[in-house]
Image (cartoon, rainbow, N blue to C red; front, side, top):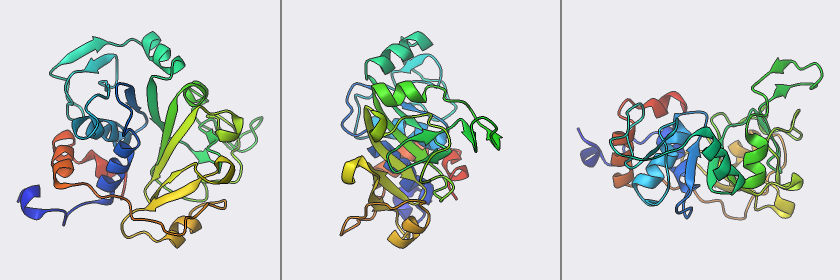
Amino acid sequence: MSRTDMGKADMSRAEVCVLACAEAFRGDGEILAAGVGGAITVLGARLARATFEPDLLTHDGGCLLTGDVPPLGRAPAVVEGWLPFRDHLWLVLNGRRHAMLGASQIDRYGNTNISAIGDWARPKAQLLGVRGAPGNTRCGPTSYWIPRHSPRVFVERVDVVSGIGVDRGACELRRVVTNLAVLDFGGVGGTMRLVSAHPGVSVDEVVAATGFALEIPAVVPVTRTPTDEELRALDRLDPERTRDKEVA
């Protein structure tokens, strides 16, 4: 039975999350959309380009700008250009790259940690290092994808600042998408605010999973669900349903 026959009856939480990630790129126009750290972010960028944001630039995960929007794991049929790492850096420095990153910790101002857990001089766990997080957050638009929304991730204070937040001069923190909700930094003083809760998730659940006080609007909408066209596009982009391995 096809998606057209079934409608949205079999829509998964992962598909809601992919669409929420795609929405973070809405209005970007001709800018490089860089999903980093998982299938959901890559699918979000590709879904946006395949549907409502056709001028986005997307790449193959390496150094090729894609002229088409290929499924995960497939080579592009059309290559628009060569994008070596130095040119990625030029795009970052000039605010022409919107990166959707991951984070092991994030605080109310959007400071993130991907470096170490615990005292930086003698950490309990060594992670990735700061990588490109300082440059991304200082120079261009940045969003985050957090697959497991919990107080261990959403913390009062990060152990190491890898990506800078609103209080440290971030250029533009756009959205934080999690398995429970969509958030932004429209709260008082640039603090984190609840934008929407995913279908089947209550505001109380989001609050309980957050280790600091969120700004909660008087009315919290439900996160938008994919249209039939978007679901069909997503099935084409991810025929192996890799998305469901990231989100239960």
